[in-house]
Image (cartoon, rainbow, N blue to C red; front, side):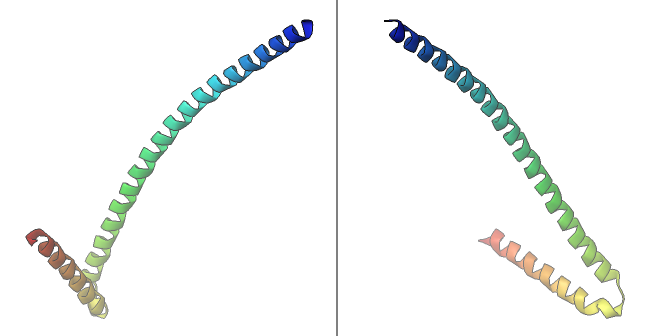
Length: 96
């Protein structure tokens, strides 16, 4: 009889330990999920900032090419043609 009681007591202790660990891991998981969400938000924000900076850089390159000397006239013409094609695509999409 005492072996059975000891086994039940041991099982009860192990079950309490498992439940304690479960609750700890559950809370830790919630914290990690919250941190993950915050980091995802920051990452998206930084990606948008990077995209904006890349656009500004492209505009600056075009501006510098346009104000540049005659040696850069070929690059200037290529940039202007690319911009015109992009504008034409936008107009086509708006008319569709």
